[in-house]
Image 1 (cartoon, rainbow, N blue to C red):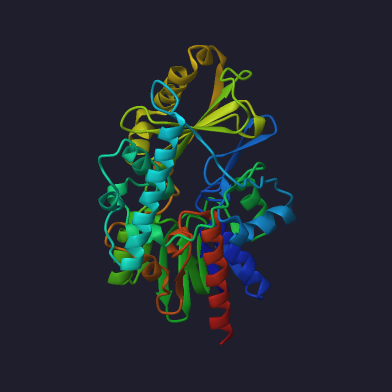
Image 2 (spheres, rainbow, N blue to C red; image 1 turned 90 degrees about the vertical axis):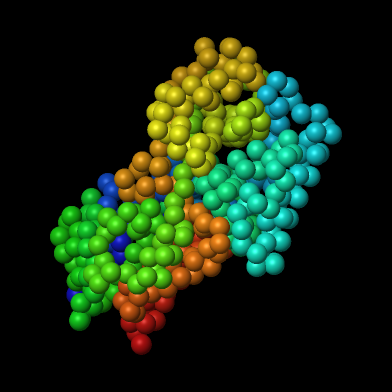
Length: 410
């Protein structure tokens, strides 16, 4: 009989395991995948150069607990104070007046979203921004990156609840590598997809591909994509309000397309960002991040779903077409390998990160509530002010494990 079984070895599960063990609890962690880290995952895109397939920014750095942990674990990050992207209008660069109007519209949209929270008026983000401006498609696209869903499927009240200090620091050494080091030495069983969680008279029974565990409590940290798919059977079934909360905070999609290039066919400085406003769906491009010879284009929402279904080759060609239009045909000859993510079809997450649907603000709190003082929940989807982030997941893991330890002690 263990004190705690944790389902999922992402940032929330690993943080919870470390916290619970520090409190003296006997803990076991079950992970369905072949690796730890969840949606924090780094691969080398070039020899010795980390590339994050999932989370890659230390958001709200001054209040982000993983900043200190990165320093302690020796994972390199950059203190980026500001971000000034260049705006391309399809055939030319925006002039100073257009760029100023672009920034003004962006700020006005953010203020409109924030006003929904103040007025407790929870509607779709798409309903509170001007629809006939030349920059509207950009804010819709930006919303899809921030929430992994299109603006008509995003709660303005929930989006405004995110606590943003404006400090977004890139993890040069790989956010996935940081989370992997965080999990070093923890009692994690891999390839152990959980199939059933049953509340018993003496505690909880957890059946997985690796066998059965008995525990006093269980903490579920898997994505709402997995919870909503009902891959895990709960016995007895989850209460109605819990199932409604899972449905209200589904996973959207967000993918990264990276292409390696010989040299610098773009003629730009390292870490240059370009906002390409060509067509109905804009794209944010990061050129030569940290001085390395690759380019990243990012997608979100329905377009990310469509391009993921089209396949890796189509995603790569889409990014190349944009680069050729902006910088010329020479970039094609310089293009080499790369990495294309596919979070929507990842079997262990079934999406990128959580979105709160319009009219459902407050459901994250419901999702976080324990059931019968034995079944607990954590993860980025349960964070009311740091959802869709690694540090949000981490904090919920720490807080929930503390709650469990206090309850067991009592």
